Figure 1 (cartoon, rainbow, N blue to C red):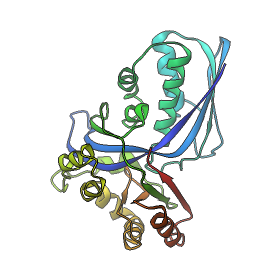
Figure 2: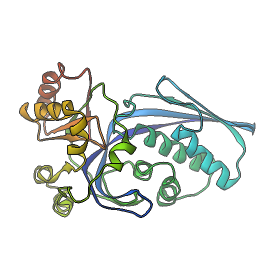
Figure 3: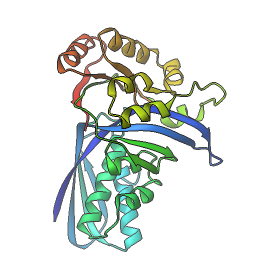
Figure 4: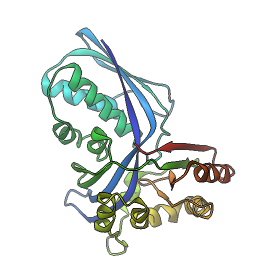
Length: 283
């Protein structure tokens, strides 16, 4: 049996952290959305006992227990006592280590595939709860729709669908360590977002107003180490983006544009800053 599923990239329309839990992890208050830039995850399920094998077309990804897709398969195998040999193939289109949730989305796709193939009958909420031990972005990626994400990342409130906006995503040749950035959050210095106004605008379907309340409180921290991220963001805004900001801990920066022509203008204008540029739409 061979099953394939898309694993779309995610963006943080807003990213805030009100506090740090006793376990050292941040409490999140985020609005996340998926876009039509996606990896493709295939799983071949054998009719015999065996191990989990992971293959990718990226030399930057591990193929062992460090791979989030491997971890996702292992969780369901152990919890539901399945021993079939699994071969996972991942075709990468989402840039690696980009703040776009590629690994988390791959893991979420594995969970959805095996939940269906093994007829486990788990709801998306149950899959999201199980997946939190893999990474804080995986619960959202299980759903892959516009949502308000809180707590450790496991509390998901779906929001109304969004209009057809265009998004330019650019990743420079920078590697950002997410654990390092998260460890350095100073909660006395954070300029918190007004997510309540953002959420109200999204529920009202008023995306023009919503863009005014989008933001990422981690930008100053990451940009302190990588000022070229700020230069890229400023360039996108100067080219006419409705909003431009960093996704996750970076280094990817995205620009939301309400027309394709404006998105093409932004794309053409930043080619000198960055070679890895994609134009996508919101899912």
